[in-house]
Length: 136
Image (cartoon, rainbow, N blue to C red; front, side, top):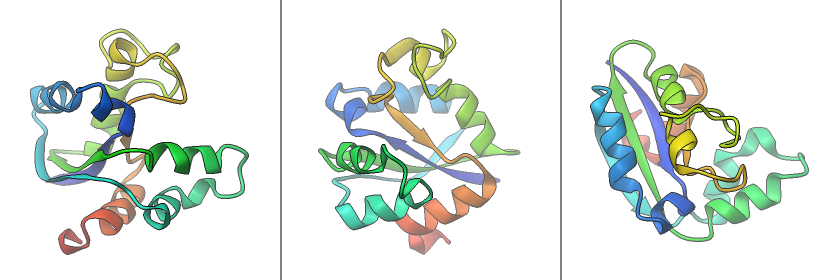
């Protein structure tokens, strides 16, 4: 079984969408193997988004993910689980996300797009190590 990291971002938690997002993951035969509602601190957020450091949107990204609790999960499934999750999420910009995807159905703005999913097996391993080091 393959694992990936999924975060229901603060806007998703604030809107009460954790259950709906988990339902969609589970309907695709993915299983949550670890999860925690956690208020990310600045250092963890910066470590998580390190690949974006120096970009103009970096500070707003960190401010957003740390503004209120996020649901951080490890999801497991067959094959490339990260790819399955990314397809379920839809395009980063919700205005371009297909109907039937999480962002296409539930999000409106790029700045509040509800969900994060690892974008490769390497990213999944790195991100799981940040949030759930005991699983590494």
